[in-house]
Image 1: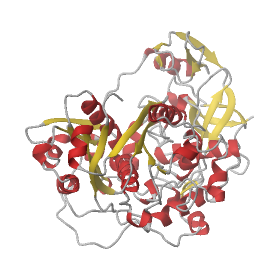
Image 2: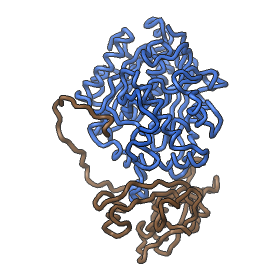
Image 3: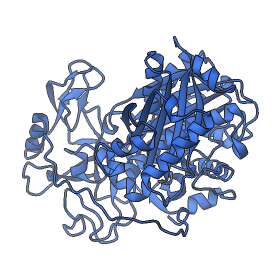
Image 4: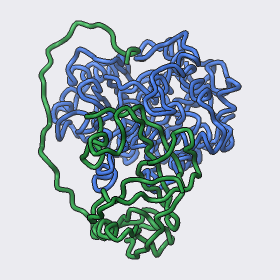
Length: 383
Length: 167
């Protein structure tokens, strides 16, 4: 990148099932929190980018109220649909372009205000799939899980092991929603079958939550903090709609990761990355992501979870925060991963801290069966 | 969702909806041809001259080649299951398929499971979502050979394909 850009501040809400706050209050608190964390004021911001979807917000042009809560009053402002990592990408481009130096990125969803899984049906092709009426996000994920499991001999137990790892990791995360320190494989397998093989504890809980990240150009970043977290690589990729692709692979994640790795100079992801934060909306997606991110060979994802390689004490910890299975404030989930990765680098990850993190990967996704993927590689010298 | 909900004091809530009425989505000529072909037990796909892929049901554009899929190709009504799920039991009034209650129209019995499947019809390069009929859930597997179950009275509508069944 021609200009170095760093994360200099962040904040997130206590993600939960039914937050007793308005959407604007929730957004305001995380944006104030991020400004406080960076030690700057609203007046220092050059641009504000927010992320959500109008369907999930339940109103059109939904940023008209959120903008003020995010600190955009009489400022350059824009909104991105879907995941917060897409908004971070947009903000990064604005800073790289040299037209802005400091950007605040905010993302949110209040999942309790409607049935988010019902909303997922509106992403389906209205001319065919909606008419047929057998798919929603859970059924599509179950199809994908079945296809992946069939290709590589992955069992229900492997999916349950992912859930156990992430839900027990979430227990140490003060911001997580679903904390289950003592959850077992048996309990996961015994939880309600939503659409076989997907069970309740293998699917992310739809949460109320928000988060905000502040990024700055190198010059400004060094003024603001002694612990900048550099954005070293970024990759974004979308693949075809669910019917027209090989659901058993996450090809767009593979491409996004390859792009980010090239930019960051990463040649051996499993050795070069110290921690990974994933937006796994379903347990099987985490195993698929191990392969797409190059942490193992194709079909070997199950080995990493079997051997504990991706556990908090493992060689390449994945989701020490609990990941999306621990909390899923839909549009904020990817940006929360960026925050968790940055916290690891700065040594601020509290009970989720992994020792000696210099390089971390954060992943965001949107669309059925992870159609769109975004990868950020972050780096820094830590505390 | 017993794992998620805690008792909390509630704040002010206002009931609201977003009832915009029905959308009138613009359909493609290709889909019109597909639907018309069903009346003659014909599955029409779109063919991409760039990558030679055949997509069923047809789509106007090929994302890979970034061009219009001008061609047509009829594919077989026999194919292979590429993935499947077995639903929880379906009860009357709980599900709509093509706008109809599958229990009420006699597609499934009250309390019976439904098996949504992706099928790759012979000659096609894409998946088509439909349901597996006349099969024991224990027998369904990826790679299973199936054929279309056509409606008794074909009308040139999506409902002409009731589902697929094992060959």
